[in-house]
Length: 90
View (spheres, rainbow, N blue to C red):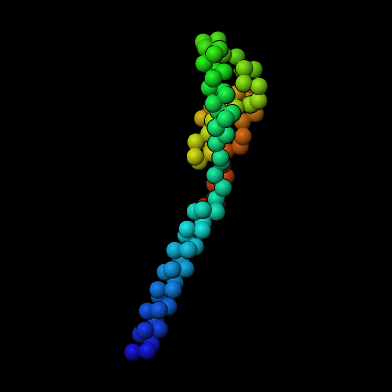
């Protein structure tokens, strides 16, 4: 009976450790933080200048990306590299 209890306790601890590792792995990845004041400024500048928008309207380069890092729109000629992908097993 003691051996079965020990195995069950070990299984519970293993599942708990696995859960902690999964949560840590998902929260450890840094997500880009939105710069809300600068975005609001860019929106107001675009509204004021509509419909004659020019690339120099925003001053600094403005890049819009989705949550995976894929660039959706940019005012810069230099596009950032695509997000790295983990190597595949052969």
